[in-house]
Length: 108
DNA sequence: AACCTGACTTCGG
DNA sequence: TCCGAAGCCAGGT
Image (cartoon, rainbow, N blue to C red):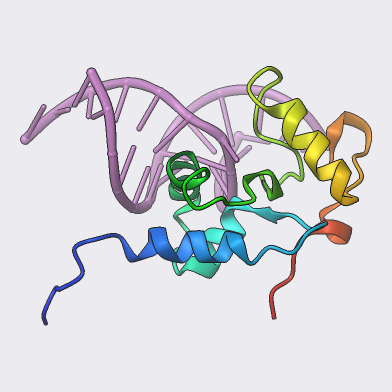
């Protein structure tokens, strides 16, 4: 009853989750979506980042896709994100692939 | 109101 | 293992 929540609770949840990603680690869109409560909201994470990344100061660079690669395209922020991750200690393999088994954030 | 887009994920061939 | 299509959520046009 009572639908007092008109805003999207997921959006706030997603933001909080991303803010919890520790430095030197990365998380996937699906992972964040799942932690936020909707494993199917991977695309919602994208939308949220684009809208709140600067407002909430989110570590958007720590969010990558499930393949372990940066989803951004060269010239669209790819180089920047990669640089920021490398600066935190995240290593890239051939093809710009990050070993998730070593760098993926694991909340407990 | 309908269609399209977006830094995705998952399944099938 | 790689490629293509479908599914998902919300906002913009």
